[in-house]
Length: 429
Image (tube, rainbow, N blue to C red):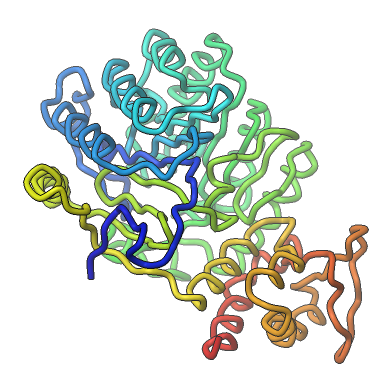
């Protein structure tokens, strides 16, 4: 199935202004052993200054941006993800930002984030990125032990982490996020605490803690089976999650999303767009978009992505027809399930009033009927408008104003179980 990126008069949906854009930069010096993202390995000595592949990709992605129709108010968030976006030269990153600015506009107070790996940038590059508009850095740390970094296939060492943080502080970048991974091979609770305490000592404004998922077709999938040594058991992984929450909340971080912690005022504005099921643009190989009620994903291989963009350019030039992309139009059920799946990741949960207005009060009561057993087990909470947790019993109606959320940490830990029940219950929606 294909659709026009111009969805007016085709699907009966008025274009909804998008204010966020994700830009995928797929290049990495090597592929980490846990990674199943669409990436392109260039080797340890390549970056945007000496790689023809990176230069060509920047040409193509700026072309894609230029031929995309705008349903947009000025962008309020831009996120450069990867891959390793910090392999881009300053000039290349600036070209992409300028392409976004020309096409959509960028708000003066926009959050512009970039994922960076230790050892891939210096002070000069960092200052150039800042001049191009970058004001938030997500640093791919993963662990504070050289042995664990090597077991992951990472290209940096612990000394590179501290050098990267030093450079960020010298550049006076305040909005810094650190990524950590738990459940790694050979990782014990004590070793996990080492990483957590080291991260806290650096006092970033944001910390993300992800539990290792052994994805099919990755190196880890060939090496390990979940629950078998040297990977921690599922129970140990759960204890690591609880310990992370304990240490980080104790250090003043707000646990605002299943895997994310932030100091006051530093939640990731871009990622909240996803969790609140709002629309966004995506650009680049394998990137996903949510535009005009449609979700679609670009090809995950470089050559196929280039051909896809070329076909859009030819289509636009020769026939002035709508641009085509593989996609699906969300049904009401899709939209409901995605709203539940994403919104329940947030600590504040889902507004009962908003759910009722979007999907009807009968649907909200159906959701509650499914979730009530999990409230009784302590995994789900109903919050009144005044913030009070309500101990609702069977047959009691939900308040009109308030929210539905997973408890922290147990509800978050068992979120997959809760969501599986919801998805099964809502089959008939």
